[in-house]
Image (tube, rainbow, N blue to C red; front, side, top):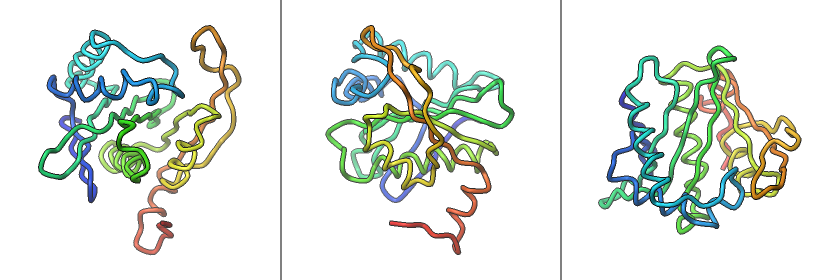
Length: 192
Protein backbone atom coordinates (compact mmCIF):
# COMPACT_ATOMS: atom_id res chain seq x y z
CA UNK A 1 0.00 0.00 0.00
CA UNK A 2 1.36 3.39 -0.99
CA UNK A 3 1.13 6.13 0.10
CA UNK A 4 0.32 5.81 3.80
CA UNK A 5 -1.36 8.82 5.39
CA UNK A 6 -3.06 8.70 8.79
CA UNK A 7 -4.08 11.52 11.10
CA UNK A 8 -4.86 11.73 14.79
CA UNK A 9 -5.91 14.81 16.71
CA UNK A 10 -2.36 16.20 16.86
CA UNK A 11 -0.21 14.04 14.57
CA UNK A 12 0.15 12.91 10.98
CA UNK A 13 1.75 9.60 9.98
CA UNK A 14 3.00 9.81 6.40
CA UNK A 15 5.61 8.61 3.93
CA UNK A 16 9.14 9.94 4.33
CA UNK A 17 10.56 12.52 1.93
CA UNK A 18 14.22 13.50 1.37
CA UNK A 19 13.54 16.73 3.28
CA UNK A 20 12.85 14.66 6.43
CA UNK A 21 16.51 13.66 6.85
CA UNK A 22 17.25 16.58 9.18
CA UNK A 23 14.30 15.72 11.45
CA UNK A 24 15.28 12.04 11.52
CA UNK A 25 18.85 13.05 12.37
CA UNK A 26 17.53 15.05 15.35
CA UNK A 27 16.21 11.72 16.67
CA UNK A 28 18.66 9.06 15.48
CA UNK A 29 21.66 11.30 16.09
CA UNK A 30 20.66 12.09 19.68
CA UNK A 31 22.17 9.99 22.49
CA UNK A 32 19.02 10.46 24.61
CA UNK A 33 16.74 9.12 21.86
CA UNK A 34 18.97 6.12 21.10
CA UNK A 35 19.84 5.23 24.71
CA UNK A 36 17.51 2.21 24.73
CA UNK A 37 17.77 1.34 21.03
CA UNK A 38 19.85 -1.39 19.45
CA UNK A 39 22.26 1.14 17.94
CA UNK A 40 24.37 4.10 19.00
CA UNK A 41 23.66 7.59 17.59
CA UNK A 42 23.74 7.73 13.81
CA UNK A 43 25.72 10.16 11.68
CA UNK A 44 24.26 12.47 9.04
CA UNK A 45 25.47 10.07 6.33
CA UNK A 46 23.85 7.13 8.16
CA UNK A 47 20.54 8.98 8.37
CA UNK A 48 20.64 10.09 4.75
CA UNK A 49 21.13 6.44 3.75
CA UNK A 50 18.28 5.28 6.04
CA UNK A 51 15.88 7.86 4.61
CA UNK A 52 16.88 7.06 1.01
CA UNK A 53 16.48 3.30 1.61
CA UNK A 54 13.11 3.85 3.29
CA UNK A 55 11.84 5.98 0.42
CA UNK A 56 12.99 3.37 -2.12
CA UNK A 57 11.38 0.50 -0.20
CA UNK A 58 8.03 2.33 -0.06
CA UNK A 59 7.26 1.64 -3.71
CA UNK A 60 8.48 -1.96 -3.84
CA UNK A 61 5.94 -4.58 -4.80
CA UNK A 62 5.20 -6.33 -2.58
CA UNK A 63 5.96 -3.75 0.07
CA UNK A 64 7.61 -5.25 3.16
CA UNK A 65 8.53 -2.16 5.16
CA UNK A 66 6.64 0.96 6.15
CA UNK A 67 9.14 3.52 7.47
CA UNK A 68 7.06 6.60 8.18
CA UNK A 69 7.43 10.18 9.34
CA UNK A 70 5.47 11.42 12.35
CA UNK A 71 4.71 15.12 12.03
CA UNK A 72 2.59 17.60 13.93
CA UNK A 73 -0.75 18.70 12.50
CA UNK A 74 -0.11 22.35 13.34
CA UNK A 75 0.93 24.99 10.82
CA UNK A 76 4.64 24.08 10.72
CA UNK A 77 4.02 20.30 10.35
CA UNK A 78 7.46 19.56 11.80
CA UNK A 79 8.82 16.03 11.95
CA UNK A 80 8.87 14.88 15.58
CA UNK A 81 9.14 11.12 15.15
CA UNK A 82 9.78 8.07 13.09
CA UNK A 83 7.63 4.92 13.00
CA UNK A 84 8.19 1.59 11.32
CA UNK A 85 6.19 -1.50 10.47
CA UNK A 86 8.08 -4.45 8.97
CA UNK A 87 6.10 -7.38 7.64
CA UNK A 88 7.30 -10.71 8.99
CA UNK A 89 8.00 -13.17 6.17
CA UNK A 90 7.76 -16.09 8.62
CA UNK A 91 4.38 -15.20 10.11
CA UNK A 92 1.37 -14.59 7.88
CA UNK A 93 -0.34 -11.22 8.44
CA UNK A 94 2.17 -10.21 11.14
CA UNK A 95 4.61 -7.35 11.54
CA UNK A 96 7.08 -5.90 13.97
CA UNK A 97 6.88 -2.24 14.84
CA UNK A 98 9.06 0.42 16.35
CA UNK A 99 8.99 4.14 16.95
CA UNK A 100 11.22 6.94 18.14
CA UNK A 101 10.44 10.53 19.03
CA UNK A 102 12.54 13.66 19.25
CA UNK A 103 13.49 13.99 22.95
CA UNK A 104 12.30 17.62 22.89
CA UNK A 105 8.73 16.30 22.50
CA UNK A 106 8.78 13.67 25.26
CA UNK A 107 6.16 13.82 28.00
CA UNK A 108 3.32 15.11 25.79
CA UNK A 109 1.56 11.83 24.96
CA UNK A 110 2.94 11.78 21.41
CA UNK A 111 4.33 8.26 21.92
CA UNK A 112 0.92 6.73 22.60
CA UNK A 113 -0.59 8.70 19.74
CA UNK A 114 2.19 7.51 17.41
CA UNK A 115 1.74 3.85 18.39
CA UNK A 116 -2.03 4.13 17.89
CA UNK A 117 -1.47 5.57 14.40
CA UNK A 118 0.89 2.69 13.56
CA UNK A 119 -1.65 0.17 14.86
CA UNK A 120 -4.43 1.77 12.81
CA UNK A 121 -2.24 1.51 9.73
CA UNK A 122 -1.40 -2.13 10.50
CA UNK A 123 -4.89 -3.35 11.27
CA UNK A 124 -7.16 -1.06 9.25
CA UNK A 125 -5.03 -0.38 6.15
CA UNK A 126 -2.92 -3.54 5.92
CA UNK A 127 -5.40 -6.01 7.46
CA UNK A 128 -2.76 -7.62 9.66
CA UNK A 129 -3.46 -10.07 12.48
CA UNK A 130 -0.55 -9.60 14.91
CA UNK A 131 1.78 -6.69 15.68
CA UNK A 132 4.67 -6.96 18.08
CA UNK A 133 7.59 -4.87 19.21
CA UNK A 134 10.51 -5.11 21.61
CA UNK A 135 11.99 -2.62 24.05
CA UNK A 136 14.88 -2.41 26.46
CA UNK A 137 13.95 -3.65 29.95
CA UNK A 138 15.13 -0.25 31.26
CA UNK A 139 12.83 1.74 28.99
CA UNK A 140 9.88 2.09 31.35
CA UNK A 141 8.46 5.04 29.38
CA UNK A 142 8.11 2.80 26.32
CA UNK A 143 6.46 0.11 28.48
CA UNK A 144 3.84 2.63 29.67
CA UNK A 145 3.30 3.88 26.13
CA UNK A 146 2.68 0.40 24.74
CA UNK A 147 0.37 -0.48 27.61
CA UNK A 148 -1.66 2.71 27.05
CA UNK A 149 -1.91 1.87 23.34
CA UNK A 150 -3.38 -1.55 24.19
CA UNK A 151 -0.41 -3.88 23.75
CA UNK A 152 0.23 -6.78 26.12
CA UNK A 153 3.65 -7.53 27.57
CA UNK A 154 4.61 -11.04 26.47
CA UNK A 155 8.01 -11.67 28.02
CA UNK A 156 11.74 -11.46 27.59
CA UNK A 157 14.05 -12.38 24.73
CA UNK A 158 17.31 -13.06 26.49
CA UNK A 159 20.47 -11.37 25.23
CA UNK A 160 18.63 -10.27 22.12
CA UNK A 161 20.58 -7.10 21.29
CA UNK A 162 24.29 -6.37 21.28
CA UNK A 163 25.29 -2.76 21.72
CA UNK A 164 28.70 -1.40 22.61
CA UNK A 165 29.98 -4.96 23.01
CA UNK A 166 27.36 -5.81 25.65
CA UNK A 167 24.39 -8.15 25.30
CA UNK A 168 20.99 -6.88 26.38
CA UNK A 169 17.63 -8.54 26.87
CA UNK A 170 14.48 -7.25 25.19
CA UNK A 171 10.90 -7.21 26.45
CA UNK A 172 8.25 -8.01 23.85
CA UNK A 173 4.76 -6.52 23.58
CA UNK A 174 2.02 -7.46 21.12
CA UNK A 175 -1.56 -6.85 20.09
CA UNK A 176 -3.90 -8.94 17.94
CA UNK A 177 -6.46 -7.66 15.47
CA UNK A 178 -9.47 -8.64 17.62
CA UNK A 179 -7.91 -6.92 20.68
CA UNK A 180 -7.36 -3.78 18.62
CA UNK A 181 -10.97 -3.90 17.38
CA UNK A 182 -12.26 -4.05 20.97
CA UNK A 183 -10.00 -1.22 22.13
CA UNK A 184 -11.18 1.11 19.34
CA UNK A 185 -14.90 0.24 19.37
CA UNK A 186 -17.32 2.79 20.83
CA UNK A 187 -18.25 0.36 23.62
CA UNK A 188 -14.62 -0.56 24.38
CA UNK A 189 -12.70 0.85 27.32
CA UNK A 190 -10.47 3.49 25.79
CA UNK A 191 -8.65 4.36 29.00
CA UNK A 192 -6.99 7.74 29.57
